[in-house]
Length: 317
Image (cartoon, rainbow, N blue to C red):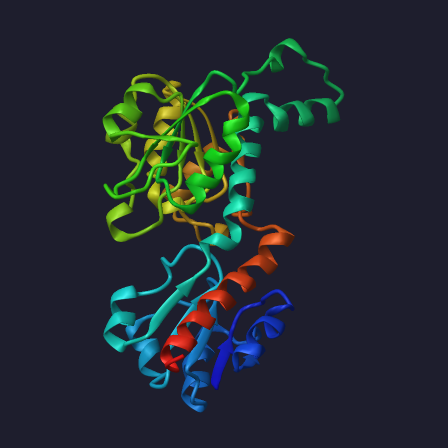
């Protein structure tokens, strides 16, 4: 048997997936992050399910001495100290397979929004303006699309792009990254030499902080359309604004920002955000790439499958 604390809102199917595994759930999405340590100390929880409300740190783990696993209901694990998890002997399970299709579809939508000026055209018609020639757009077919990162999300995007008649190049830091039929794996220098579009699919980590910076963007041979459905912190927003101003980035679609708590922006962040939100060649959305009704439930299914394997292994089955 496993006693598991759930501190974030989850699709209501969660009990149906986990209870057959012998998992008893304490469903407490009402808990604030500050209240979680005391909740862990009050019960012998061996499991914890989180989204992004809470940072799982060494200090937090000390309040849950019985913890054996933490389930991250989503793909990114940048709110979890993985080194501390290893030290504490706690297993991390996440679910990038659960929302990769949602992200792949959404990235196509962002690319079409940029190429065909959809948000701008919609706003103009609503304002009583009818500008056809000014909204003549680009086609995806024939373009060279560059993907930075070729894990679950990058592959899902590439698979959908395969229907458009474009060339997809991908660069991944892992030399053992397996190839597939949807993208050609290339060195970073080749991606920079050939890509017309750059789409970011790398996770956030200390090593990836501002990985896409002024120097990296300057290495691209031609002006770019830029998409970010990964994490805001992998992109240096000062470099992005600078290159949007000069036209070296043609347009950008950002589902994530450097600071998504808009009421807490520093003066520098506020200045960059003010530029982005008023620029006609920038599309913004509130981190919803993986946020579909289907992915909401599918994440539960993925976590249940992985947790079933983990509990079976721990129980000697």
